[in-house]
Image 1 (spheres, rainbow, N blue to C red):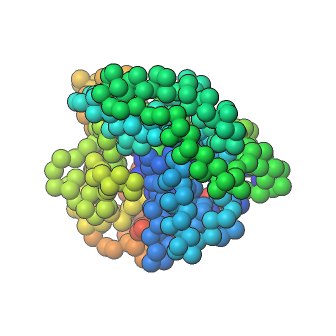
Image 2 (image 1 turned 90 degrees about the vertical axis):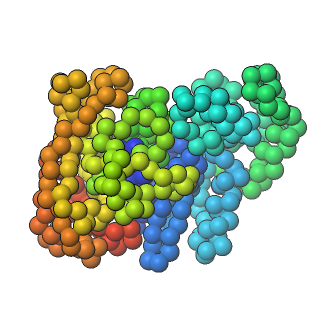
Image 3 (image 1 turned 30 degrees about the vertical axis):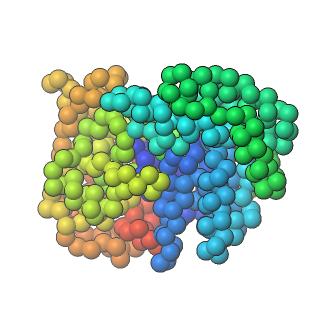
Length: 427
């Protein structure tokens, strides 16, 4: 069986957790391949709501093996906090697998993340301060700590000593902060070794063997396309590859094993943190979307910036990721509006752009060109087929499908797992 990749097609918070959970009933492995605990998924099952930050959403589905891949950076304290919280609610977490090659977030990474962001002042990126970026920087600089290092104290100690030679200088002389001792960092990391040992393995081999057995592997992206460090709105991006290409490098699965890429888009657009956002709303319409959509970050609690659907970035995401199917979430949030604008192109200094501008400056100055569709007043949360939707809701879905670059195969009409309209099966 081939693998399936799920990615966010906007700036994150599109509802990937619900889509992953929906597909989880039909797959054998769910893999988190990038990011860390800097983003979260909210999954609603019946009357139960689960907020996941580091763990793959598949951990909530019985029979599924959840996997944290080599492309993830792992805060071990957060990992065990989440596992304990789920166990206390009766969730079986015993099948979790963790890549031996995943990198570990150390205390000094978190501290550097926070003080660097403060130091930038008005030029801040909008980082969550959880040490994600500095840990990826260590990885690229080849001074990172990997999960497997926790099982060899001499290797671990040598890596920590090397890292702190520079980092303590930065903390004390540039940021006027107290440095860390090698003993404190080593002791903290070693305290997790026995607990993680049963879950650590060669996850790339594990997934390769699963695919050879005709089992289905679902690759779950964190963050989203416009936050990808290469293809996003740089520098206001995350520190990893959140696009479908990152699914390969972050899991060890080659691209030839993936034949379906599912892009998740909201029926409108949101963004957390700094950076350009062409369709952002500052009026009562933006407040309406924020209130109806409960737009606050799962991990950070930060209010999300809200705007109308942007077909330009949807087309971009479809192209960059090779999207085969879109899942359109939160269509219900638009209910009650008389009219619903959709951004179909940008105006940049009087020039129309149907695709993403080539440079960041043009994107920053882009003004949305809208086409306006009639809204609907009906409650659509009970819809289970496309024909159940009001005519204007159907027209809205068809319109955004035509201009987004891939078919809308699933529509979310409410937060719960079963509040979904399936047009084309994703499995």
